[in-house]
Image (cartoon, rainbow, N blue to C red; front, top):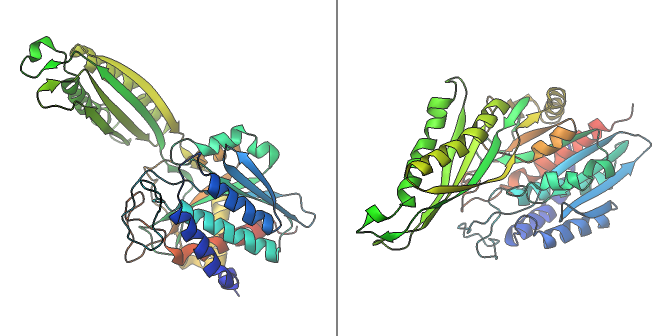
Length: 388
């Protein structure tokens, strides 16, 4: 009997947990109730539990047998500042917040695997289940590492998983090397001289300067990159003024840049502030630029990715495993964990008839793949920690 079939009795309980988390979302570094729930469940299943890593992170540890190998499995559990529009009976009850990226599902999958492993064992070594805060904005993975994650909970390898609603449900995707982009961000405040809209000659208009900056930044990809390279530069915020007959004193912009190589990332990090400052100066406006926390390239270890793929093929069959052809332009702070330990990040297809894209106000995690992902975690753990 396959593991997913053995785990069938857990399905209703884990869907209930997933939907509870969906109803009660919490922002990064504020996941206090989520953290308490996860810790309480793990303790009840016999795990040794540590809390407070990266402020709200939780690690559960379960050892069995005499083996000295250890594996880390990571799930994220923060929500997003998005107003939900699903109309579901278990929709978010917190105005302006929702689980729009499936972190509720990631947490439920790892919890299901944790309970199954506690009940059935079948491995020889130690498994650390890592529940991470603040993936979306604050680099919770790095915060946990800075709090001694891998010193306190040694892992010979570490693995993570993300649902993808554009891939067929139950299909696992793998890619060696670069899987997610480097991300850099910049907050910009333009300061000019305000005045009446009818006398622009006595002002220094930050809106005009900002508009020029937006257009100039688009040339970084078209005119600064080798045509065989790729990157994305986006101005996601441009705010200024409140009256049609007044030129404001200030304007604010937020710039987001994505790259797939360290060289392109370094170019963006250097050129974006240069373009902003020089464009601003040409309009007599000053620019204050603050770099935001960015995430490094997520680089999957080739050997560990091949290994994780083999486990999926052995467990689910070749027809449920694909090789991803190209990296994603999104960013993932699991990259910090892969800088410290060998491992791999994989994706799980979660397509459905009603699936919406990640970060969409109508998105909901597909519960049909919950036990599929959980069973893979259990199979991976048992294979990695099998007796010599």
